[in-house]
Amino acid sequence: MAVNMTEEQLQRLLKAVGDGQKGSMATCNASYDGKKDRETLEAFLTAIRIFKGIYKISDQEAIEGLPLVFRAEAAVWWQGTKDTVNTWEEFETIIRDTFAPKKETYLLYIEACRGHQPPDSACEVTCETRRVL
Image (tube, rainbow, N blue to C red):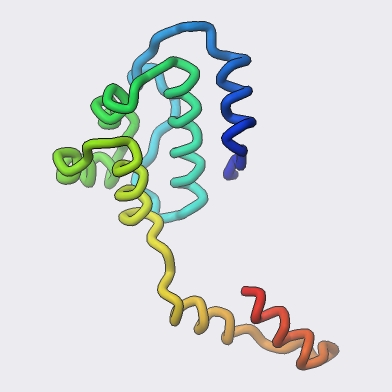
């Protein structure tokens, strides 16, 4: 299940629960195994972003601590990738590109066209629904 928060909500949460503690990724309960699923990846990124904020972990310390939260395929991937990542933003971009790449436009079109028109539905309604996709 993905958690959606605005930046303002995140900052309020961090302010409410942050008590000046300094932590490390070693105490983070979130982990990621490399499952190629956008929702799973985004939930993981949200969890570690919140963890970093609550425990006031710098981006650099978090990057160095990532091996502690990766498992299976993600751990192997990180070993080959870690030397190319310099910022937290780069990390988020490259992990998304690797484990939750955007679908090509033609694939989205094929998926949208696979649907069947229900017998009690007007063509215009079905076509308008497909355009929204």
